[in-house]
Length: 283
Image 1 (cartoon, rainbow, N blue to C red):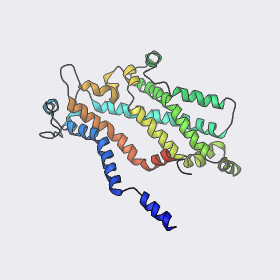
Image 2: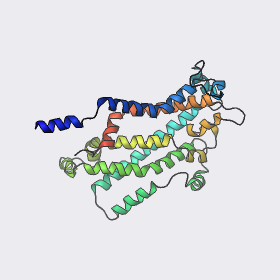
Image 3: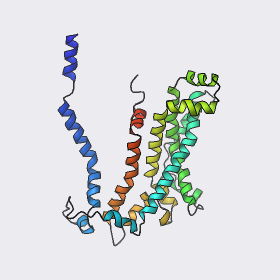
Image 4: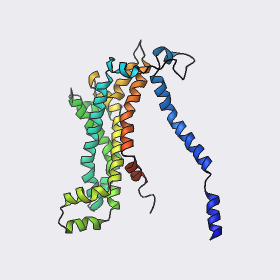
């Protein structure tokens, strides 16, 4: 017994090495964001200086106020991105949840073929289908183009949501649903009151995946949205880099603003997201 305990102690990792490794990983992945933050506080002259200065001579916190009154109008673009991302996420949840539940709970003819077709759609991206997407939604003008982007992003993220959610539904014993049905609940009530709370980590994982993918989507938005005031952030941000004037400081400022909602989302659902990503790793 003592020999086993001594061996387990010897195999324990050095806490200092673990700490140093953790610090290195954090610094490595945080460096681009820190550089972006520092650049957002520079003047136009500081950004273009060669050799570059990593620390601004005088931090320009006013950039975060001036950018909203610029010709790019990032406030309107931020609204467009938010509406499209939330709309696509809700659409995917509305369609993927019952589909994943049905696939996980029932065995029907063509089930594997259906799952295979769903998986194939994950191989297609808006860039590949840009011409077809443009022809399909070219007549959608005004705010209707946001609806077109919601449909496009929802369609391209639906397959992943169905796959991951059906895996979570399948991990819940059927006896749980059968007991609820015996107690008098209908199939829809069983889904909403019994199954959904049990698979919530999987739903959160799907929400984060769909929301972040839609938030960062560029190809479909670039093809469909021609009016500058309706463009999402991914399309409007490059307009800071004009032919004669390049406002890099405003580009970095808008980029910092754009990542704030995603950071807030991760902070709010971090625990459930980790539970969804690590589900099934331990028996």
